[in-house]
Amino acid sequence: MNRRPGAVALSAAALTLTVALAGCGSSGSSGSAAPGAKGGDAGTLTVAYQRTSQFTQLDAVLKKAKSEYEAAHAGTTVELVPIEAEQDQYFTKLALMNRSASTAPDVIYEDSFQVRSDAAAGYLAPIDDQLKAWSDWSQFDDTAKQAGLGDDGKTYGVSMGTDTRALYYNKKLFAQAGLPTDWQPKTWDDVLAAARTIKAKLPDVTPFNIYAGKSTGEGTSMQGFEMLLYGTDSTLFDTEAKKWVTGSQGFKDSLNFYKTVYGEKLGPDLDLALDATVGSRVSTELLPQGKLAIALDGSWLPGQWIKGDNAWPQWEDSIGYAPMPTQKGQAPGSTSMSGGWLLSVGANAPDKKAAVDFIGTALNRENSLKYATENSQIAVRKDVASDKDYLDFNPSFKFFSSLVPVTHFRPATPDYSQISGAIQVAVESVATGAATPDEAASTYDQSLVGIVGEDKTQAS
Image (cartoon, rainbow, N blue to C red):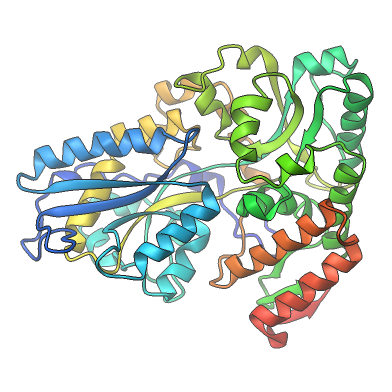
């Protein structure tokens, strides 16, 4: 596994590890306080998670798990609490729920990058004692266990899967513009050159989308900016020195890439680029309708094209994939970012064992297979990753799994979420022309010092 400063490396083995909790959901509750009792509603286990018009796969799995869990636990009701919101709004609404014991959920759909901060804030409960009772826990790779670790070294969640990111491109539009349909760019300049050709030859098509607004939150930080930064010779965080980096050339170069894309009008119009729904529109409208030629996006997109309300039967013939190249083609040649989500137990859950048992039901082999296939997840259970149904379900799995050796993870520190916000401010200011890349980088450096303190930063 390629390791760089600031990247929590994930070995290829970690992507074929077992998250097997099969059978956990069949064990009874511990007999303590009613699971997830809220406001005197005894016998209820509450599960909070995200649901949007294009992200319904988790909702389907949790509904199935609810039925199975209730059948095995007479007298217990699982109350599903879907939060209808895009990612940043989901985090905000979840944080508001967690501030009061009367509204805090028992089981929480948690982004891996927020585990440490939410654990430190007292929103999550450690579940090591419950995990010790599961024989399958010994099959977990150490790197996978780290996804759920808090600063205190305790475990605060169980991984549901992971993902990678790359370039999608419309082969039919490329052919119309005279570009190769087996496009594999080697540098940033190659990406920009293709976008410029699309703009010249197909003026009604948006050449390239890279997320650029504060409203798209982590989509801008991780899926956009960090996909650039980790393709330079710079990094956000020096893991050896345990310090955040200021003044890096890679940071400025990444912002200059944004300046080129939005300054030359190679990206979406700003009213769309700065809209919180741009991600939904890219996957359900712009790509399927041939209005966008290139998109820097996540491995999960094909999941919604295979079946469901946003099915796009022609996607296999229309869409090609290419790794995001490093800035100048330097080794290893391409880059990616990986994340992932977990199911965690709320700190206020009266019966932690019951909450973990539900997680076991939701993530047993059958349900994990359903979720991994339908949501285009890189499987984190060995039995799912090797399952023929999984391998045959989605032809994009092989490509996106192949990016694991060049992938990176966001710095897993409690203050990362604030730093991510500062990155979003920098990117949007450049995309809108409100600041030059040098000005935006300087503002970011000042914000960074304000967040972590000067003693936790170092000049590049």
